[in-house]
Length: 112
Image (cartoon, rainbow, N blue to C red; front, top):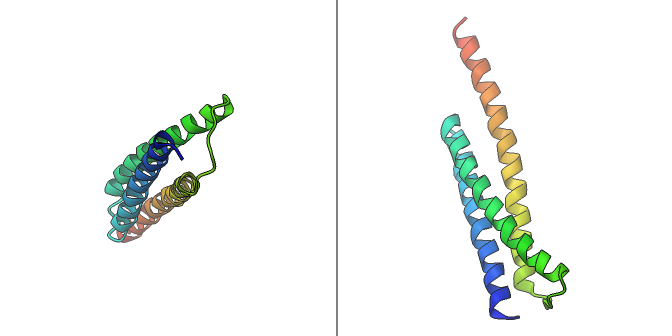
């Protein structure tokens, strides 16, 4: 594995890891129904996962142009990390929406 390919994998892992961390922080914010903070954290997580996807896409496009890229467990791990972070982000986004609906219903019931 050449250095550039290793750096690409590490950048993907770094950005995906940032996305996972922000996603987990957003879910923790839901513990106290801090929905606005959760939304902001998910926005940051989304920005990080977009960066991870872009780095990964650049590498895949380079290979599709004929650049030789040998198989790498590190790059496979990077792709796996990116996919997991993306899936977790999607679930968290849905949960934030769900919590927002629940919170509105609770507030409506409390005002009756």
